[in-house]
Amino acid sequence: MPKSTKKEIKKVTQAIIDKELSKPYKERKPLAIGRGGRRVRPRNYGHTEDRKAKLIEEALAIGDLVNPLSGRKGPYWGFVESLIGLGVDKWHTHATVKAKMVEVMSAFVNTKKQTIWEAFITKQSRPGSEKPKDVNGKIKQNARVLQRLNQVHSYGLKLSEFGMCIDIHVEPVEGHEKCSEEFIQKGTYHYRLNSKGGDPVKPLYSNPSAKRGRKPKKKVEEVTEDQDPLILEK
Image 1 (cartoon, helix red, strand yellow):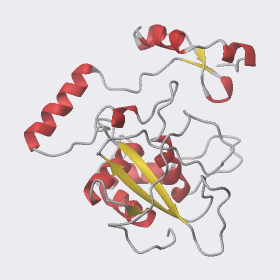
Image 2 (cartoon, helix red, strand yellow; image 1 turned 180 degrees about the horizontal axis):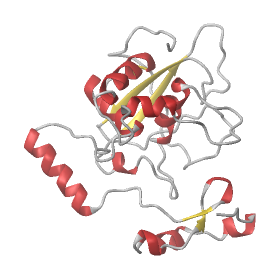
Image 3 (cartoon, helix red, strand yellow; image 1 turned 180 degrees about the vertical axis):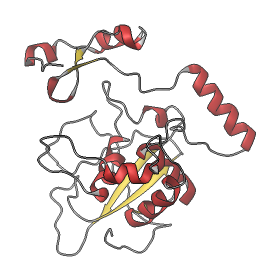
Image 4 (cartoon, one colour; image 1 turned 90 degrees about the horizontal axis):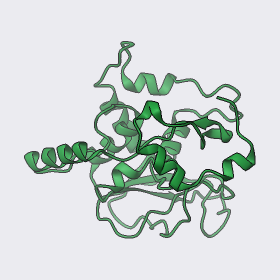
């Protein structure tokens, strides 16, 4: 679909989005909320009431936590599933999470006879992408995407509905300086699936000038326990 003008983008309010979300997907009017101002149909990023009830029933049946992203098995699901397998409410290094993702996602095959891990690492970047990401970059980006709880593209909503969120901590590497007190530009990534609720998570951006999502309200916590040795991503 064609791009919209700045005026058209500013006209899109939450009330307009909510009105379209009340309709079946195919009947929703395309709005100027896509990448670069493209007009796309609004998506509902939360669970339906039926789906929520089913997940709660499943959790009660097994007496344990279930992955709120269960359903379509893709990279977001694989990331959260790996954090659950490694231990909820504990910090894990990027390298540890990546290794677990290989294990978890290699157990499932898509319609193209690829494992979902193979599909993830071979997926091509968008045409015209200035900085295509390698597999490590994709994992880091997906972790940040799952922190989003803004009104338009709330990828973290399904986690939030079950009192969970993704926490990210970057341990500075000797020789690299912080680009500000709030944002650490380089270092070893650590991830945690936080199931204890509390204040909203603070999105961690690789670009401190980025203005995606809502205003951060919670500081990224320090790694103080249950952490792996600090190693660079492999």
